Image (cartoon, rainbow, N blue to C red; front, top):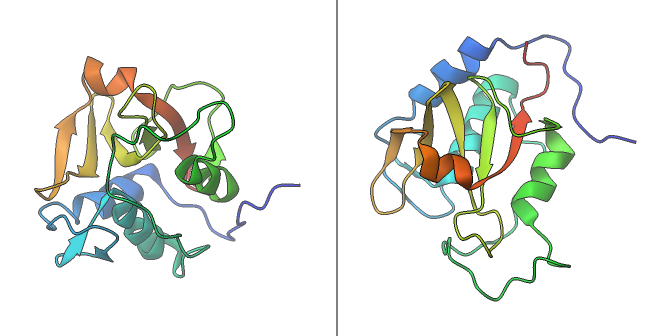
Length: 157
């Protein structure tokens, strides 16, 4: 049985993209989620969720800022970011995506999925970049090779 939230109204992909773009320039702050004040990549997704639906579906656990974790065991290691996305969003069967979808990345090939953003175009995405701010980046070959999951916000059409 799925625990994905059901919402009475639909949300357009344009609404998702517009909400994400309003976070551009927000400074990077680990575990924060305050538009204009500070956020990390998960904080961006959480903030867009709040703008689209109100309250967040669950509180995130504490997590490290390190993209390059080497102590993780892929064969049995839990991936909290992917697990939470699967509980609360609709996972695409393959790694194809449309603007407005949530993209989750495994930055280190042998590490857990630890980065995320929102596709704004077929070749661009918005994400919180450590040490900088929320930016829009080219979804180039480097990023595409690290794509670990693609998710649709509930009710998005």
